[in-house]
Length: 86
Image (cartoon, rainbow, N blue to C red; front, side):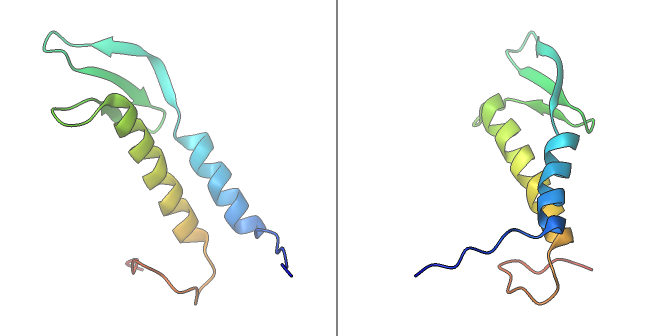
């Protein structure tokens, strides 16, 4: 038997907020040294590096943004892996 509980509006809104404030803008740029980069709508420049791809940086940036938004909206008392500074 499974009981499905809906996601709270606060967490759903946090997820949507992260998605709507962290999207790539402009066109792919390339530097003479082979670095490729894009800007995020938040102003962060997302680029490849010596051991990571641009795609990996974009995915990490979006995951971090989502984590921060969800963490800020989570109800108090939920057991956590990471303690957030308050």
